Image (cartoon, rainbow, N blue to C red; front, side):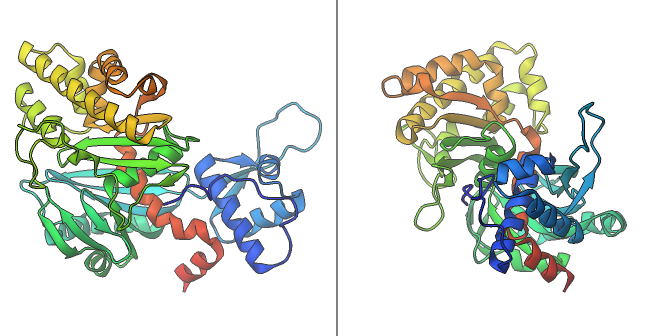
Length: 404
C-alpha cells in the first residue's frame, strides 16, 4: 500500500471540467479530510492549490454524495464571513474483524478514523474460519438495527495474523490460527452481505499508525507488533509499504535471535517471537490472559523478582533485534505496538540504551523509538483503511456502486 496519494498538493491548474480530473480532485479532498481531520474551505484551498470556486464545487459534491458535511465555525472575532468547516462523514463506516488465538475483535470505524464501536469476543479455543464467521455474524446481527438506522456500511476489513493474499482473499498461512491455504473473503462476504477485503494485521497496523499516530508524516519507519499470535512487522520505505515479490515482506517476528532456542510455529529454531513472547511473560506474571490495555496496568505495578527478570530479558532480546532492523532499514522512527508497546513502557530507558548499543555505528542513536499512539484501536483502524481505499480512490464511482 502506498501513502503517496495522501495529503499531497495539487498544481493550481488541474481544477477543470474534465471528468477524470474532477474525480482525482474529489479523491484528494476526501482523503485530506479522512486522514487530516476536519478543515475549513480556506484550509482546503491552501493545501490543495485549487481555487476557491473549485473547492466549493468539490465540497458540494462530497456533501451531495453524503461523504462529507459542513458546520459553521465559532465566532473568531475576525472581520468577514468565516469559512465553513468541512468534515468527512463519520457515519460512512467499515466493519472490521481481527481473529486471534484467544479472541475475535469486531469493530465499527467511520471516515476520519472515528472508532464507533469495538467488541472483543473471547474464545475458549483457537477459532476456525467457520467459527469466526459464526461469531461475527451473530455480533453483526445484534447490531443490525443500529447499523441500518445510523450508519452507511461500505464493506468489511479483516486483519489476519499471517501470510495473506489480499488480491484473492486467501490466507496462505496463519500458523497460530491453524489457517492454511484457505479462502476467507468469499465466505465472509456471503455470510455478512458486504464486500470483504483482507490483509496482514501488522501491515495494517503500520498503515494506521503512519496515518493517524506516531508515524504521521514519516516516510521511513519500522513497526513491530506483539500479540498472542506472536510478532508481526511492517516497514515503510519512502512512504510506501515494503511488500516483496509475493506480498509477504517484513515477517520480522521470524528473525533468528537464539540459535539454541525453542522451535517456532514456523518450524525454525529461535525466532524473535519465541523469545519475546507474550505467553512466556504471562506465565511469570501468573496470568492466563490479559486484554490489550490490562497488560500495561500489570507491568506498571510492583513485579516479583522472576517477573522483573523476564521483562528485562525480553527487553534485551527485543533491543538486539531492533538494532538489527535499524541497521537494515535505516528508519526515522521505530514504533512498538500491542504487547511490545506495554513491554517498552515497563522500562523504556533500558530498551533505548540497548538499541543504541546494538545498531551499527550511531544509527541507533538517531532513530526515534515510540509506542504506537493508537494502542488497542490500532488493528481496528488499520482494517478499516483497506475498506476505505476504494472509496477514497474514486468517491463518485464507489458511491454510485454502493447505491447500485
